[in-house]
Image (cartoon, rainbow, N blue to C red; front, side, top):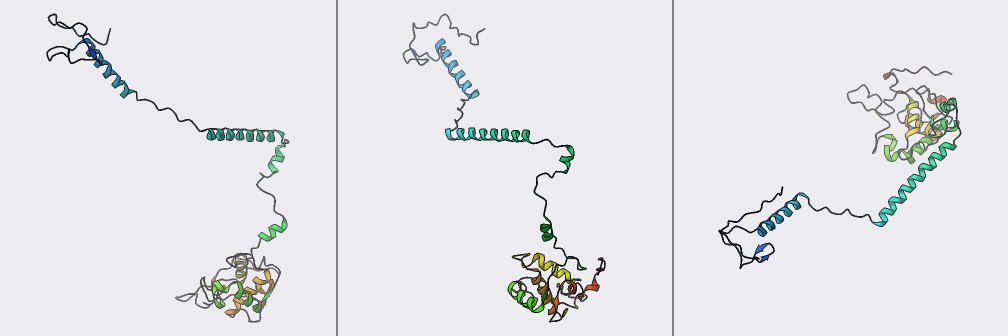
Amino acid sequence: MSMFRRARLPRSAALPKNPPLTQGRHSEESAPGDDEPPSEAVILSGFTSLRSKNLSLLCPPQRPEPRRSAPLAAFAALAGLAALLSFAGLCRAQSQAPAQSPSQNKSAHPNLGRALTPEEIRNLDITVTPDGRGLPEGSGSVEQGAKVYGEKCQVCHGPQGKGGPLDPLTGGVGTIASAKPLKTPVSYWPSATTIFDYVRRAMPLNSPESLTNDEVYALTAYILSIDAVVPKDAVLDPKSLEKVKMPNRDGFLNSWPPPKH
């Protein structure tokens, strides 16, 4: 059944023969009056125009997809080829690897590096305990320590360790139990070997672990001499350093066993 019903004209109305049309409309000579129904051509033209507008709203024109530029397409192709070749090489290497027994696989390391040599382990294992274990060979005097301190330590900790941009190293002895305690390595720390350990691993601040063992012994002797913990002519080495009694040693509970001689 047709979607469009043709309009019928009354019998009394006479249509002109071959009415002139201009783009689906009557010309001015044959334009119908107000009481004259529109002709079949006018109705068909209006329906076609309305239908085309509705279709354009429902189905907007699609934009063509932009084409990739030639350099971009070539680069994508090369990247895909490189990935394919890498995967093929990996598969080939795995296929050629010698087979290992389960026991061998368990003992093998996961290729994260190599085992450290005994010398490398000794260089990393620099911990010194409060009872003196771990102290290296070497020695240093108060006089030598004053020279090293002036060259590498005074710029941060001030003259005689009294403090500068960074914290003081000396002073405060006897103030720990007071209302205004001054906690410094000399007044608060319970063990002289801890001063040696800290200076060796962390000082100077811009170049830690750059001091020799003799320089660290000398610096420790100089710092302790400022507050008269050791004499001004003291020379410290592994045996003498572990025997130094710090001012606040009794302020701590010592859980370390006594050193074995």
